[in-house]
Image 1 (cartoon, rainbow, N blue to C red):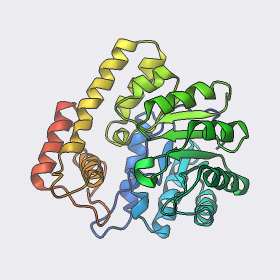
Image 2: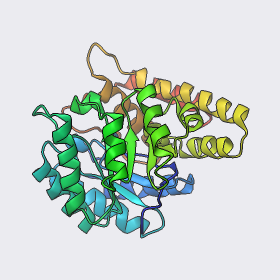
Image 3: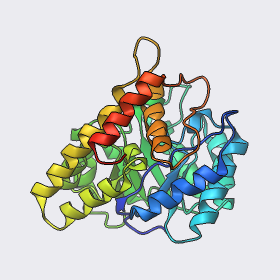
Image 4: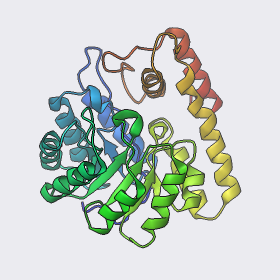
Length: 308
């Protein structure tokens, strides 16, 4: 389907369920998609950070995209990450995911090699020139070690290179600069990747949210978005605060033995497993799995939110 311009609402970054031997669990992935669609989401984003894209082989990336796009069958737009170190490698991913049915591609700045803003701009221009679907910028400096400057994003948007931004930078002032500038670009979509500041981002003028926690509670994020759009700000704030409490599950992992990615993705997958959506909570290697005690703590967060 054609990507809405601008894309609005709740577009969760879809977890990638894995089997015990760390292959893509297609039946669980299909159940997860049905769970998200039933929650009322407005689109799906595969092959992002929450999808564990950095850990998937090219074969697995293709399988995920084909599975989700084929199952959704045009009911919702499917965005797919085309994330890699260099422009030629990104272009290979763009070709693969668009052939598999993606309606847009989500692209970070190049990484590993140090890049200059002029090189980042050239990267996006080259990708957009070869892509047959809209290109959305992904600002995630914690992963790629480059912050996308607001003036550069707005210049590329004005030139028709970028169709939107998924902002996971944590820079609320920079986000506001993009939102403000994008008011003169009616087709450009600005989406926040922060689960904890959705109401604030919407108040600034964001079009929507890409929440990793939305895998666990899509209904909650849809409810939050609809309450805000209806002007019920007090109820929206209360829903946001409930979701902030639920997000506490990402802290159950012991930081002495695992990184924050293992803790967060492990918590999301464990929650989905406890809710009966996916068959196995395993994360991709070399991430560290949660212990039995940590799993029990995730269950308490779910119970507290009325989800278990």
